[in-house]
Amino acid sequence: MNRSPSTFFVRTYGCQMNELDTELMVGTLSKRGLTRVYDESEADILIFNTCSIRDLSERKVMGKLGQIGRWTKRKPIIGVTGCMAMAKKESLFKKLPHIDFVLGTNNISDLDYVIDEVIAKNKKMILTEKQFEENLDYFVAERNDKVKAYVSIIRGCNKFCTYCVVPYTRGQEVSRPPEDIVKEVQLLADQGYKEITLLGQNVNSYGKDRPDWSCLFHDLLEKLDQVNGIERIRFMTSHPVDITRNLMQAIRDLPSLCEFIHFPIQAGSNRILKKMHRIYTKEEYFEKVAMLREIVPNATLGTDIIVGFCTETDAEFEETFQAFKEIDYSVAFIFSYSARKGTPAMRWKDDIPEEVKQERLQRLLQLYYKMQAKQFQDLVGTEKEILFEKVGKNGMVKGRTRCWQNTIVPGGEELVGTLQRVKIHGFSNQTLHAELLRQPASLL
Ligand code: SAH
Ligand code: SF4
Ligand code: F3S
Image: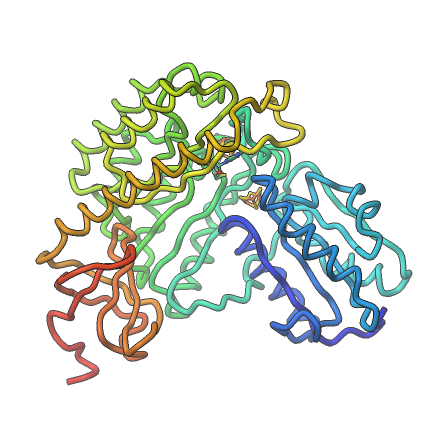
């Protein structure tokens, strides 16, 4: 082991919360004077910030770690962080003896300490506290993106859907004080950021664990909308049960709040929803969507769906298919069920054959692509506001509509970070093609 490391490599798996945690770890390590490298064979410290949501997520990391264990020339310090650290804990050392430390999702602030101990004592370290304590220095985060930033507002999940590892890998819900969030968002605005995405495993539970703050999710949104310079606010992810009328009104009334809402249905049959412990019926879900459409007629919806959950029949899948069609989602993440150790669903047989799961998945994907093409076709000829994010290929610059649709126009660096009106003239591969309605002032 190199006792005076100078470089590190981090790879992130999983969701946006993991991406933000990586940004925090990168900031912490840079503060130590270490330099980030992007080639793992050049790093003195390797960190894998992992995800356990599906079996495949874990297998990818295990494969990678196994491969590194066979390195003979270099022996970097290796750390496993994130949800797999919480799901597998000490067993990781048994399976992969070359790992030096395991740091759980609730111990990110201990990264420095753990590395010091590993170096000083040459011993293996593991910290996997069950519960998050709001002790992170969010201001240390080192972000790659200059236009959009993730901001953590609540960690953990109390919902306990029967298929899901998150309540076990992230612990109970812990909200972050509103003043801290406002301060960070103000700082981001001062640094030139134009868009923030508020993160949490269930953002609209925000503040429920702290009635003394009298600040629920929609109250927080109101405060953040007032921060000068932030043009767009998004949030990820939300549970349908906690999507309230107040939140819908906030989407309608707050200028910076985008009219896109992730509204994950997961399944369209009441029996399956109950078995998943989603705590809403299909009818309740549809009622909420109708309320949203009434309050915010131009809102677009995203969803997550799991196909092939234990005992799901063809007829029940058909209900999911119909619901998907009816709601007309603009964004969908569709997964086939993956049994996870430690979750309540493990007590049932994972009885839907893989080929049936795949067939259902493909059917939904085909429907999704067809519906998306239709939505894009309907947008041709319309005008939209785009926040440009980065330069793409072939003289194009990439951005998104307020409703999260990828859009490209001819242009370059000068557009990045600006908001522009464009006219949509076509689309391909889940991307809208557009042209600027007028040249930006800086180009005149
Ligand atoms: N808090 C978020 C979900 C985070 S996990 C929410 O409730 O919307 C993201 C998605 O992964 C879930 O919405 C679900 O669709 C999917 N997922 C979770 N556990 C899964 C499992 N065991 N198998 C397949 N997909 C799963
Ligand atoms: Fe998992 Fe359900 Fe919590 Fe989402 S709401 S993180 S799916 S337990
Ligand atoms: Fe994965 Fe953990 Fe996120 S399981 S999806 S990294 S909360």
